[in-house]
Structure formats: C-alpha cells, structure tokens
Amino acid sequence: MPAAYTDIGVSLSDFVATVEIQRPPHNFFDRSLIAQIADAFESLDADPSCRAIVLAAQGKSFCAGANFGSGRDGDSGSADFTEEGFRNTTGKLYREAVRLFSCKKPVIGAIQGAAIGGGLGLSLVPDFRVVSAEARFAANFAKLGIHPGFGLTVTLPKLVGQQTANLMFMTGRRVGGEEAVQLGLADLLVPADQLRAEATKLAAEIAENAPLAVISVRATLRQGLAEQIAAATEHELKEQQWLRATADAAEGIRAVAERRPGQFTGK
Image (cartoon, rainbow, N blue to C red; front, side):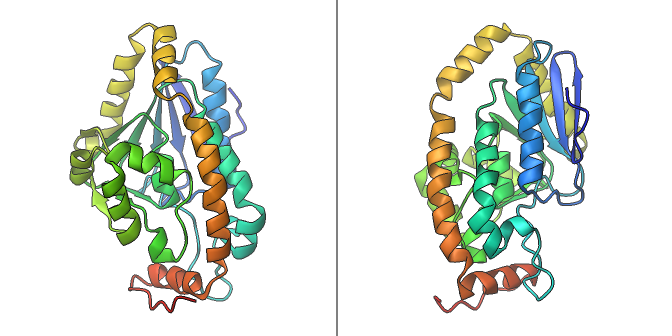
C-alpha cells in the first residue's frame, strides 16, 4: 500500500483494513482528502488479504463537511469551496468521490461525531454505519444557501426513503445517533468507547465469509450505484455553482459560522 498518505492512516489485520481520517478535530474534507481515501480503497481492493474495510476518523467529528470559513474577509476556508473553487475544482473532487463508490470491498463506517453536509455524503459511502449517541448527521446545504452534493440526492433517499430525505434536505435539521438508527441512516448504536471495536467486529463477521461471494453479492446489490453518483454529482455541481455566487450563500455561510439563523433575501 502507498506510504505517502498525508491525511489518512491505513492498517490491516486479520483480513480487516482500517482507513482512518487524520485531520482532527473536525476532519474537513477537500479534493486531496477524498483522493487519498479513494487511493487507499483501490489499493485495498487489489489486496487479497483485505476482505472488509472500516472507515473511521480521529477527533471530535467524523467529517464536519466542507471548510467554508467564517464568510468574513480573509477567511474563505478551503479554496475548493469558494465561488472560484466550485467553478474549477469541485467537479474534480466529485470525480474522486465516484471512485469511493466504485470500491469492491465492503465498507463499515465508524461514526463517532458530526457528519455534516459533504461529511454526511462521505458517511454514506460505507455499506453500514456503526454510531455512538454522539453522532450527528445533517444535510445542512439549504442553511448554507447551496444545493446538496456528494451524491446525496441519490444515497440519502435510498437509505431513509424519499420523504425523510426531503425533510432532512429542506430543514437542514440534525439527526442524532439514536434517531439515525431508527430512520435506517445507521445500523448499530453502541457506546462511544466501543465504537471502533464494534465496527471492526462487524467487518470481521463479514470477512469470515467467502470473499469472492461477498464481492459478488455486494456488486449485485450496488449495481449501477457509481454511475448514478456520477450523474447526480454532475447535476448537483451545476446547481451548487450558481447558488454559491448568490448573496444568500454568502449570508448562509456567515450565519452557520456564527451559529445563528440566516437572514435570507432570495438574491
């Protein structure tokens, strides 16, 4: 496996690999991080000693999404998510995201904290999610004044149903770990100090089975998903590009950073 990762750690033991995001405390994502995870997944796909993958993260949040900064002058956050970034860079980021959904090995997400916006999208790459009560999921795009991305318009309705997805998208409300299990957004609720162990235990249970059969069954169940994500992210990006240039997006980013309701004008 490549040793040049700068923002993730990769380990392998007893047929179970762990890919750990290492940008604590909030693990904001950008093209580089998603590309590193995708590279790790592809490397593990080619490794017969890996039969299942745990996707985990250091720090307080699993992934708090895109770093938009405070919206104030001089603090625009990651260059990937400025107006210029949405025009020129985010499409490349989404192509890396499609690579994640092309992974052949089963993936279990260990979600210890916030999975917000694009971080929610990343948390829906795995086949299963093991969560603690402290986990938080939110599709907060409308609060930011932009359109959902990262393929969420495909993945979220598949998990929770169209109506619940509509509610999450249009309100931007946060869903805690317990409610996430009730909604089908997560699969197991465990104590925070047992999260990584329980995710690994589930991965090991899958890894006990015939690996070629697991890959075959998974490929059937996820048939066409990567192609759906590719088409969805193309549309999502177009909507994000024009909305990112609006006054409402600038206000939404400031409002979220300042933890207050946005004062939107529809412009």
